[in-house]
Image (cartoon, rainbow, N blue to C red; front, side):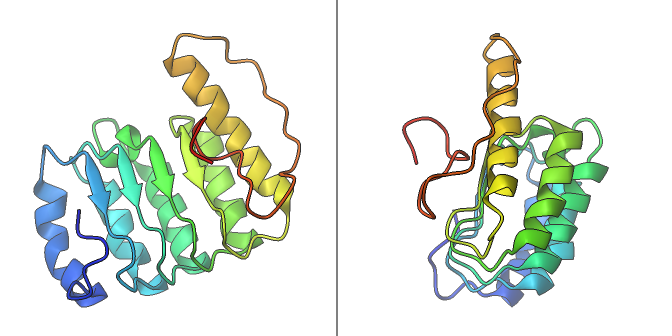
Length: 173
């Protein structure tokens, strides 16, 4: 958990990436509130190709935008069996600068991957709420499958306000 530490900058994270990629027991990677930008995309996508079994990636309260979302989506798509991309269940991206274009990339990756249980895009620049609802719907189906329930398609209605989110796990909106 490196998030919130003003001393950890994007350059600091870049220096830590080789260790993060090699950490075989790493389950949570918290890089929230440290000023990450789109330049972090390729670096963090490389973490998803690592052997670390990361279940939760916390990237909220940064300055991540569409270029980052595109690189992250590509990392999710390219993840081979046994990599962090395959074990990732929750992706927290609230309070960044992701627009409809980046959300669309993440939706396409989530459709291919189907292992994500939560992708939180609240408080970004996504104007097409249906994108947010569609990602949430895919995550709901994945959660039901993992819990042994029915993978039926959930309702994909748009959120009722900018602060509501069908992406957060139940009880955590």
